[in-house]
Amino acid sequence: MSNVCEVHHPLIAHHLTILRDQATRPALFRDCVRRLSTLLAVSATGDLSLNDRSVTTPIQPTGGSALAQRIGIVPILRAGLGMVDPLLDLLPDAEIWHLGMYRDEATAQPVEYYSKLPPGNPCDVGFVIDPMLATGGSILSAIEALHRWGCQDVRVLSLIAARPGIERLQSAFPQVKLFVAAIDPELNTDNFIVPGLGDAGDRIFNT
Ligand code: PRP
Image (cartoon, rainbow, N blue to C red; front, side, top):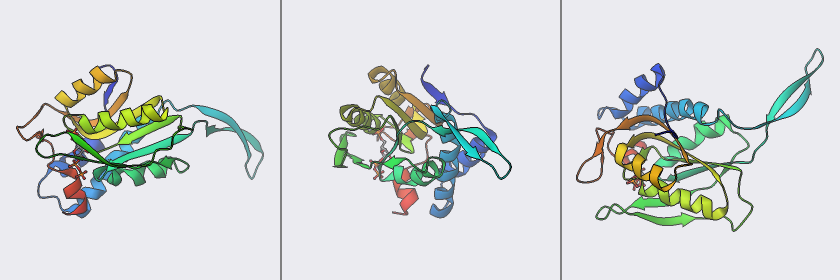
């Protein structure tokens, strides 16, 4: 699993446990999604390119740095919306490109219902965000959309990913880096992650 990074940190372990707890109400659930997304984003942005940038402090001029690449944040609706703000806090100049996708309950196949990616001028790095990677169908479909756009450096941030979905992602796109807070072992017969956290979209939006 060379391009899979399961980020280990005491704060991740703490907030992930609250996230999994069925007693956690939506307001706290959203807070935990934000905190975990920030912690994952630090790892996922660790190799972004920099240009030199000089500034003048109140004391004297000094050398510094500025992010060099055009960054796209690509939330998969709905649940990915819960991860947008923490990434945007860290990457305030990023573009947001929404992808509307839901998983058909009978077939578990992703159904796309919104995409406004333009025909050209792709961003340099695309961060696909979705709290859950179950069968991997939705993430794969999002990666295909970004590749069609021309974005070659695609990275995925998911809070919880199931091993079967990770294996599918790795086999289809071995070069795509995946950053996760937890890898869960399996899916149940309804293709829900076990132990997982239930339905992230429903828990974020209280539906
Ligand atoms: C969930 C989740 C992912 C997808 C994961 O979304 O947020 O997008 O399912 O499943 P997969 O890896 O098997 O494709 P859902 O379809 O419930 O839509 P929602 O975010 O609108 O609730």
